[in-house]
Length: 157
Image 1 (cartoon, rainbow, N blue to C red):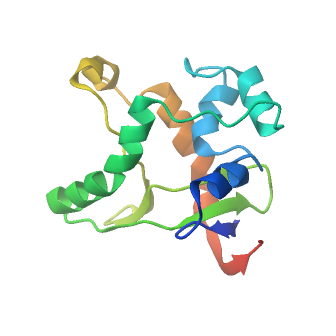
Image 2 (spheres, rainbow, N blue to C red):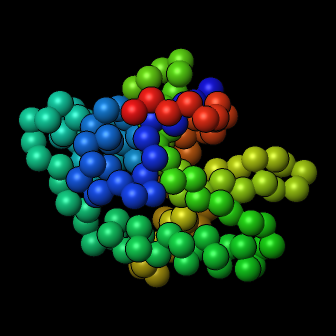
């Protein structure tokens, strides 16, 4: 079960970065597991403990964020499955270090509630997606999944 740690709809980018420092989010999970080639576990620890300034998103992450709403809309157009964007940071009640910023949530017939992860990639990366979802993204979803059960309307800050 998760609670809403913060509302993000009107939150500044700087405040959002500070809230991310309060725990381990989905995009941090692959770093903790040692399978992220862009950041080491030591860099993550230094970031979370405020020993280094927050790093600006790289080009791929920047464009991925900019294109999220387009990816959600296109998914809905192609599948007929509506995706909602929760503008919140979730925190696990059982494991408070676990945080999540969901790209979206959808109800899939015969499956139920699902996490929607909007991913964009260059055509040069197609080989990484041919056989299965890359491990770093599987870590992200596996970290986030337990937080999907949201106890509303608790707000901790």
